[in-house]
Image (cartoon, rainbow, N blue to C red; front, side):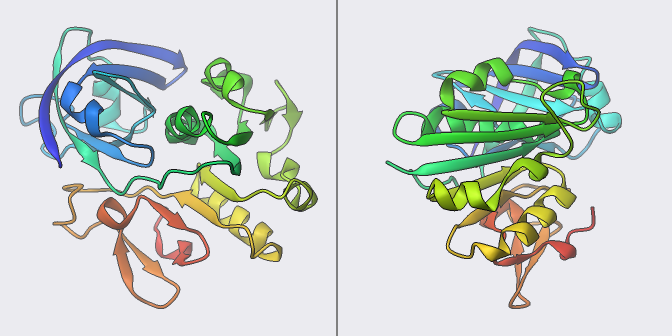
Length: 261
């Protein structure tokens, strides 16, 4: 059931330059939200920004949801100035949740702020599964949520492109097919920049037996499947809507080149 709710901001803290963590009191959305789902948030309560913006759910407790976002435009710039106690309109939870897994070995592969939805997924998977986290960012300052994720993971590999923390390079350089094969990994979930998802899909073509799922992003008008502006092409030539058919898709079934960013 999709709910529209007036949610009070609990905090809106800077995690790094241009990356923020916002917690919202949104009990009805929080009650139903599951990993893989997202919310649409109105940036202001006037008509400065007509369309709401989609945000992955990074965490969810009894009455609270949390989003983690990067300032990338005017909307998120204004959102970063919203204060605790202010009210935002939240629509959600939206999208298809990830099915529950049990007694599986799961690799989570994150790039940059793409770690956000994997934080929520890890919190649920950790109860009954083994998690191996591969997480990369440009710099040490952009490696966020690490302390929260560490107790949830059996193994954590961190990398930065400038070498300021962890291994130097992009995270896919350290995700070895031999490791995946030897550990008998059951699933891979990835979230990050589109080039990372494309390279991951290419890299793992030699392991067709391992399901690989990616969290896809797109500009959305409604988040409910009505506006048809977030389409992604399947390899069979059909189109799916990221908002209602996803946002998590098998990377072996969608044509990532059909996304325009």
